[in-house]
Length: 282
Image 1 (cartoon, one colour):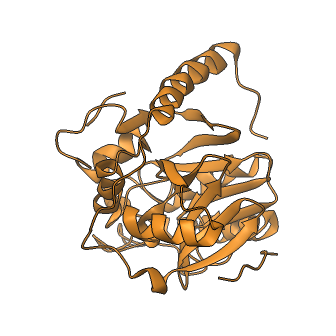
Image 2: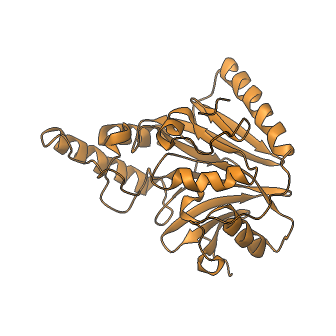
C-alpha cells in the first residue's frame, strides 16, 4: 500500500479469476484490519468545510444517502457500526460531514470508517486530507493518487490505500466493489458498486452538462466512451453521479452515444476539442 432532514427516496461485472479473487481478498483483509482499528475521530477544523446547515441529505436506498449541496454530493453507506463515504469533496470536510451524518442517523456515536475516491479533481486532495487527518483510511486508484499529489505529507499506510484494477471493501456487514474502468473522463476513473442495493457510484463519469474530458490528466472522449461501455456490464439499476440526478442504464447508454458522437466529431477538429480547461471542476 504505497503512499505516494427529511428524506425522500430517489426514484455483473464478468467473473474474476481465482488468482484475482485471492489478490482482492488479501488486500481487503489488510484494509479491514485498518478499519477495525480506527479510533473515533477527533473534531477538526478545515477551511473548506461548509456550515452544517447548508448540507442537504436524501435517501437513495435504505442505508444509502447522498449528502451535499444542491446539485450533488457524497454517497454515504451506513452500517451497524459506521459509514463509508464515496467522493466527499462536494459534501464537506470530515468534521462537517460527520456532524451531518450523526444528525441524519440520530446516532451520536457513528463514525466514518473509510473514504473512496473515484477520480482526481480540483479540491479533492485537500478534502481527502481532512479525513486522513481524522484517522480515516482513504482508498484511491494508484494513478489517480499521482494526479492528486500528496494528500497528507508524512502519512503512512493505512492512511492512504491504493489499488490497480479493482478492490473488494468489507466494513462490518457492508460490501463495496470498487472497479477501475481505465482512463475515462480523467486519466484514472473508478466506480463503486453496492451489490446488495444494485446501485453504482459513477463520480464524474455521467453529467447532464456538455461532456468535457480532463485531457491534462490523460482523459479523453474516446476513453470516456470505453469507460461507460465497461460500466454497462455491471449489475446495477441506479447510477449516482457526483453531480446531478441519479440515472438508469437507459440514460447512461444515451450519454455513452453522445460521447461517442462527440469523440468522432472532435477527431476531425482541434486537438483540444472536448477537453476541459485546466483546473476546471467536474
